[in-house]
Length: 218
Image 1 (cartoon, rainbow, N blue to C red):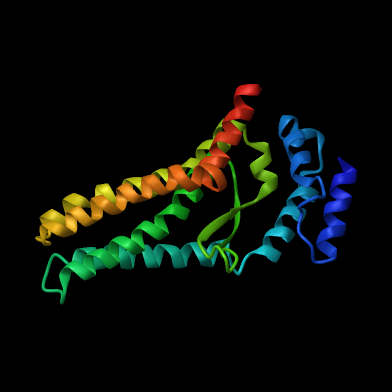
Image 2 (cartoon, rainbow, N blue to C red):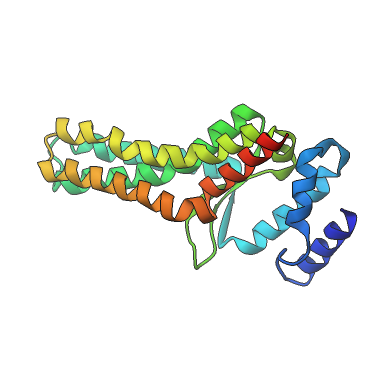
């Protein structure tokens, strides 16, 4: 274990990533008995690798405040589309898009906190994958049982699937053209298909399956 951590720290000091250091295989061992390992050292390695990777990071408190403000703005746009907004269908869809993006990370944050995890930053990923997200503190993450970690990962994905369908009635009630409701339904369907094709391999659902497998092995 210490050898893997030493290699990871050396690689990061040289500006490299964690691939090939044995860090992530070692983490699987740590998850079986986290109390036996130096979680703060592991968290620091993870945090350094994350900082090197992310395109943009914002500390968790101001980032959360900003996220809530933007989410409120998105909901405000949806509400405005009920009244005399110019191009109300566009205002509605813009509000939907904002809420869809911002609530994904908020779901991770809320469920993670309820499970005992803490978070350090909001971020935008690397230039080739510039999606927003929220970074968990790995020391607290590792102390939480695998099944609870799994549901933290799933929370964002589930929320992103629920939001479009939950707002279809709002599109109808606000008097949007019928095609707007169908467009929102199509967007939600594409989101589900994207999860099946992509998230199960590299994102939230992959992590969910990984942690559930650990829970089943425990």
